[in-house]
Structure formats: C-alpha cells, structure tokens
Image (cartoon, rainbow, N blue to C red; front, side, top):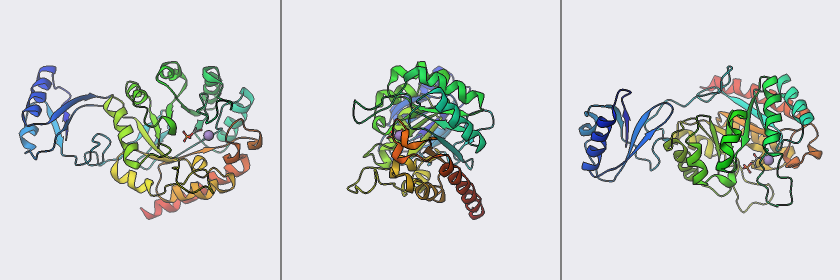
Length: 337
Ligand code: PEP
Ligand code: MN
C-alpha cells in the first residue's frame, strides 16, 4: 500500500499518519524523492483503506498487490517520462537510441563516434570508463579521466552521456560528467550501490542481472526509488541460460511483462543479449517491435580493434542502417497503437 502525501503535509501530521499505519498492523517506511513524499506500508491483513485515506496530509492512497510497490504500475498508471534536457526525453511514447563503444578508449575514438551519432540524429552516447571484466587481465577502462574526455566531446556535439558506475565511491566524482548512471548486470543486486543511487537526482538505468529474474530487476529499481530517486530505466540485456550458441539469451518476454508490471521505461540491449555482431540488428528490431522504449547498442568505427566487446559491436555502416530500420519500424508501431 502506498500513501501519497500532500505537498503541505507537515512533519507532525506525517508522524500521526505513521502511527495510524502501525495501528492497523502495517509497517510504514517514509520515502522522499525529488518528486514527492510517500509512505510505503507493508502488511498482510485486509484493511479498509478509507480509514487512512481520510487522514489529514494524505493526498491519495493506493492498494498495491505486488511485493514491490513504488515501481509498480498498480498505483501509477501513467508511464514515466525521463527528461534529460535539451529536448531529449525517454519513455511514455518517446523512444531514444543510445549508442557508442563498449569502452571509451581515446579522445579520437570518442570524437569519431560522436560525429557519427550526430550525423545519424542519435542523442545519447554510451561508453564505459569503469569496466567490469570477467578477467582481471582484460582492459578495465580509462577511469574518471576517460569520462571527462567523453563528457566534453559529447557536450560539444549536443549528445547526452550514459556510463556505468561500479561502486558507490564513483557516484559523486562521475556526477557532473554524466546524464544517466548505468548499473551493470553484475551489480544489478548491489544493494548498497542502489541505495546510494537513490540519493542522487540523475537518472539511473538498471540492467537485469546475468541470472536475474524480472521480479529481481523490479526489486532493484524499488531500492533506488525508495531511497529517493524516481528517475529510473530498466534494461533487458539477455540472461544466462543453457544455450551456448549466443552470449546470452534475449528475453523478449521481459519487455511487455516489465511494461505491464511497472511504469518505468524499458530499454533493450541487443549487443550483450546476443553477443554476435551479425545478429544484433534482428534482435534490436525484435525488441523495438515488442514495444521497448529505447535501445542501447554498441558501435565503434573499427569493431575488430575495439578494446572490449568487439565481437558484438556494429560499425558505422551497420549501425546507420539499423537506426534507419528502427525509425521505420517505430512508425509502423505507432500506426498499431
Ligand atoms: C556494458 O554495457 O558494456 C556491460 C558491461 O553490460 P552488462 O552489464 O549488461 O554486461
Ligand atoms: Mn560491452
């Protein structure tokens, strides 16, 4: 159950509401985000919610049958829109392409890719500077210095930046250089990191864990929301199954299911989902056809020479063709709705 507090609800009125919630046998948690104040109430026994709904200081009250609450669509039917500024919005009908290298490698590399994206009308560039690699001997990223270069060049091209944050200590130093924090699959359930990301007011995209369920992804988002940050995106990037013919297995089911269960935008990552460059485009298009709110795809001038994930990275020609196909498919999709 979620109690949405009125903007003028004072601390003492809030205390009265917390007492009233305890009195009906529910455990309340007060949540304050950049957009509102809520009390999440957890309990099992049926109650007449009008008893709480008529208290002073209550704007609205919602019964949510899901175990996660604030990210559930049971209370917020309207889909969330993430506004990144400068006309870049995402979600609730606004589709965005995010593209760029797996890793930021050099100023020349970022310049070249930013120019390519600008030519193609792509407004958000991806690129990791803190890289979670399976082997400690692989390239682990250029760190904060790489992010500074990445941000400067993107800003010169009117492009927004998404980059992975691997630990809580990186949140603050990254803050001024990024527009979206990416939480990688390996950190999807790093609850300390998620809690800390709740304290910032920049959007956070959470990737589904390598073996994570849809419900676990929603709980991860609930961590960030309940810690104070409503600006969230969910990302389906493939899961580990018994299938070895592809890097991961793209769970296309996750797109409509996440959109049914949550009001948050759903992004697909076909690059990590299939891991095979020649098949990234069909998987991307399948994700768009299934209703995704955006796509994040790996692009490099010379994928063969990329410092990481070259085998799943598109070159300029391939990515340009994919962007055209996505836009064509989006207009077909619109005609269905
Ligand atoms: C990435 O985006 O480069 C990445 C490491 O992705 P994931 O966390 O999904 O493996
Ligand atoms: Mn990658």
